[in-house]
Image (cartoon, rainbow, N blue to C red):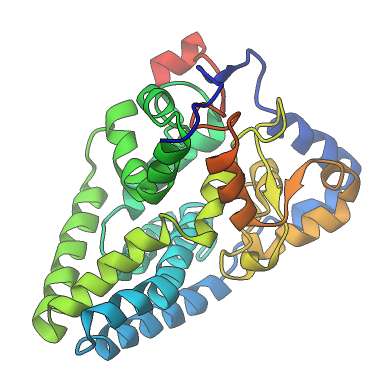
Length: 324
């Protein structure tokens, strides 16, 4: 169903990712940006408050009719749980407790993961390091779609299905593209999450458990805030690896939309990224950017030039193959 997309492969380039060079240029011109490279302890209290709100919602939905449970799961729960994934992103950069307390951040990530229902915080940290270091590198950066996704999801209808089921691709793609050995922290993450889910089921029943899991899957699927998955790195402008989003939904996403700024300065917390843009405005204002994640989703699904193939990829260098 729907017309077939025109792309038949990724956009292969043989240049380095642009962020390291731009970071050097900006720091040489605006050294004061280094003062923004600091922890953000406010994340501890914000995330804890969000978790308590979500726990309260688990209690409130336990006796709802199924139709209303799914309604509130999509409208409210999905927003909280998607926001939690961006909190886990911030935690993966050690922003709550700082780099000198890295293990504290890993424990806090496991804690933040609980209302999401699916254990992934620890493995996300490992793969996200690769995403920054090897942006777009085939077989290493698992943020980019696989060859199968590009080949199969090649019509308007199939792209819509791909967007709707994106949480499954995000969660399982790493284990097919670049599997890594299981760590003890991942095991703790999994056991903690299963224990939490069992407690939710025994205390408040199946409806609260379904609400939690549905909020996560609906929040990462066909949902306005999920536009950032496509907006961040899909090639809406030829040759551009990364795109920023400047709009109101950044409020819920810990400024995750400031994505060029984030990749340029991964040591700066999301709360400070708007300051980076203001200080180095000439570097960012001229770059193509998005103002609506809903439009991003619409354009991706309906534009025959867009597909999971619409990503810049780089062949791995010899040292990167060895790293993998």
